Length: 227
Image (cartoon, rainbow, N blue to C red; front, side, top):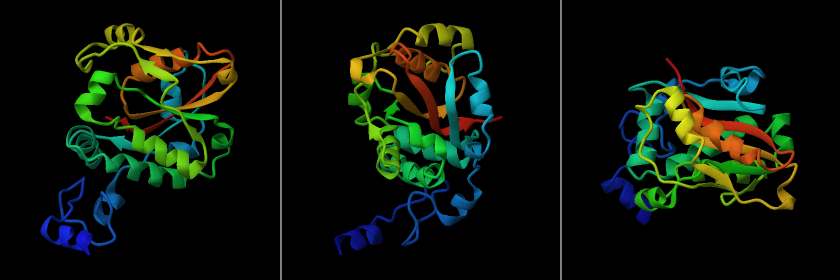
């Protein structure tokens, strides 16, 4: 009853176009759900995300769910997730993508789901890691353990979006590390992030995880920047 009253006086809006959501709509309206640009990376082994890491890290599997375009539906949705406190968007994307990933043979060999970590200071500022809901939803739906303690960020940094690729890569490579024990040896880690652009952050996280003997890396992102 209270839930219906809240929706009556404070109706939820679509994270893509701001229109009011109908009774059975969650996060996105039906129109935006149909128009959101899907990558279909899961259907192509040698997809563009995998190609991005050739010669950088040995990748077992890689995929992003959506394409990220400036001023598009996905940008609006991710902006609200990261900067407008709409944490539930993360879980919704995870539940949606899980329906795509659950039948893939590559998912059957994953040992741990690992989110790209925030520094403690950024976590306090935002109140949550925007990738956590995504990871926990995938963990639940795919029946894979979620581990947010193995990989950590050593230093707090401001946004690196204005750095060139080389400068960004050299800098980011120094800010991640791992806490691991012998039980983590030989494990296959599914590393998660929100939006992949240059891939520098994911490369640095992967290199940290590859300090673990015989580790394997796969990557899944909510979205991939697309020109």
